[in-house]
Length: 194
Image 1 (tube, one colour):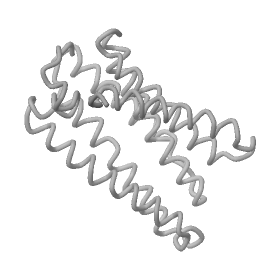
Image 2 (cartoon, rainbow, N blue to C red; image 1 turned 120 degrees about the vertical axis):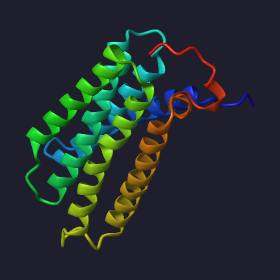
Image 3 (spheres, rainbow, N blue to C red; image 1 turned 90 degrees about the vertical axis):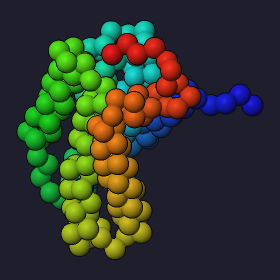
Image 4 (cartoon, one colour; image 1 turned 90 degrees about the horizontal axis):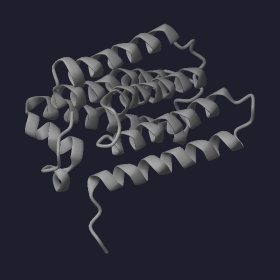
């Protein structure tokens, strides 16, 4: 079996996210807002990953800036779906502003002052407050706190918080580490476009 490089794994996982998101959307009842949010989370994350996979063939504004804004939208949808699930009003203006700021950061560090380390740190650390907020909302919700599925979701979000904090700080520490995290160790010598 040929070795699986990081870029191919990104493409496969992104395609899987996209397919599961579309399938979930097709099977969710029309009035199920939470299911719709979670399915679109997967769809946007899948599309973003596919665009990032093709970054050597697409313009940087599309493969870097727009793709990572889609990642931001998927994170916001995860948080929004969680808040709807526990009966809290979602902070929609916060989502909009956060995604626009993420886009501005990616634009700045793709074009004006290219810096892979800062871009990867930004998209990693962007997720942390949303995931922590979702964890707290689930933990403090009396109706969901005791469900086994809620505990699993909290564990997954907590793993995400730890991973993205680690990834954000490690990639910010050096450009070499950022390239490793961007392309994986098997592709670290690949051509850097932006």
